[in-house]
Amino acid sequence: MGDLIKSGGGGLIGLLHSQNGELTMPKPFEREIFLFDTYVAGTSFIEGIEELEQHLNEGDKLDFFREPDNKYDSKAIVIKTDNGVKIGYVPRNDNVIFSRLMDAGKLLFGRITSKKGYGKWVKINIKVYLQE
Image (cartoon, rainbow, N blue to C red; front, side, top):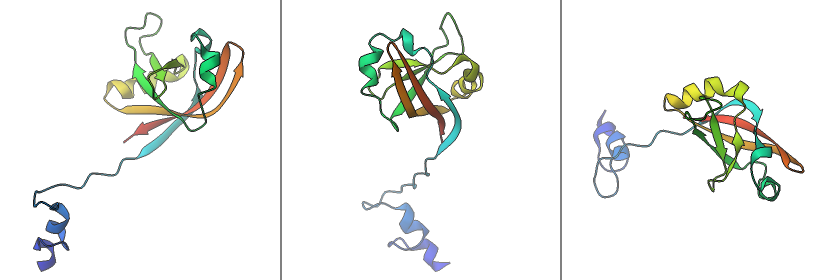
């Protein structure tokens, strides 16, 4: 039990104290939990998608943003690159549960698994993850 209360480096108190003597708590481990395979919908409506496609690579992280005021779909989730460039949406068939998770404060994101350009249409396959 004596090891738990030592403030010198070894025990629990040493773990909780930083170099300058302040009490700090270790940060919990963040996890990426895989949820679903899908694709980016609406790429044919993105101006300049042909040029943008060259800069999209497998493994790239994609940010998700809710768009509840979307006039076509109140559950819409916009997909953007890490530079904030919109590339499309989570498909309507897939967004009901994802939008509920996001509305409850959960952080969702995607990663590109493959892509193929077909002129003004680009097929971008993604994996959807929950950041926990």
